[in-house]
Image 1 (cartoon, rainbow, N blue to C red):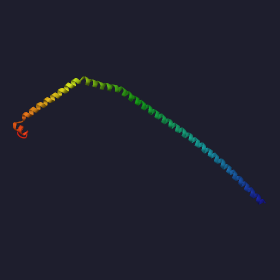
Image 2 (image 1 turned 90 degrees about the vertical axis):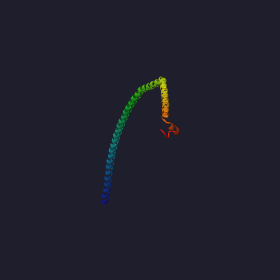
Image 3 (image 1 turned 180 degrees about the vertical axis):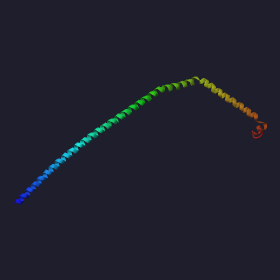
Image 4 (image 1 turned 120 degrees about the vertical axis):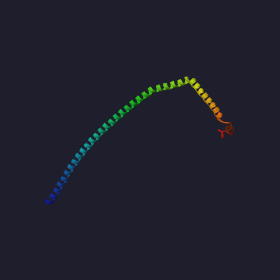
Length: 144
């Protein structure tokens, strides 16, 4: 009977030791899991903050570029607005001068046409005089 008692006692102490070890392991695992969770939360917060900073910088940079582009567009628009009336006035002035000078242009064109016609008549007569009688009879083939 003494042996039975020792076996039961040793079984009980082994069970108690196993339970105690399991409890310690459970506590250790729980504390490590909590630490890992806390670290993950901290890392997530840092990543969120970094993302927020990056997005803020990108937004700020994009806004600055848009502002600069808008200023350039306004400057170009002003330049075009100032130049357009000047160009229109110059074109209107040229057209008005052509309308005013139409009599002079018509007279010059008529004089040029008359001079060309007179030159053609003079050159034909001169070419006809150069031919001799034989050239006239043969159509210019002989006796030039």
